Image: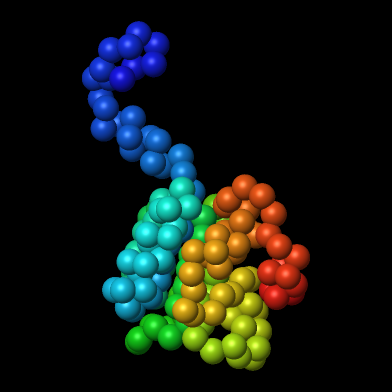
Length: 156
């Protein structure tokens, strides 16, 4: 509907695309279909758009093409791993560089330090849930409100 005159818009699909593209996007990079689907549902429930990539090469291409604001990046990717994605992301144009949240199965400080040095400023542990993802997305500014002090301290 056209808000001005109450008539149907001649291009309703265009309006939907414009509305969708106005929302921030979070790319989910994981080789597990199930993890990607769960994370995508969480991200969409939080009011963001979501994209998916099965591997690091697809993820870098997605970032070049769509410039998501955030990436949930699995540490254990086959072939081209998370560090390969981080190297590729470092070469993106500044306006295409997303905030990167590393998703790891182990609480390994050395791994987090390595990933942080390569460009993943944030991390969460698997299995993750909606409050964990919401907290990180809030911390990086994609959702309104502030992150809790305890989550802020975890990434410093």
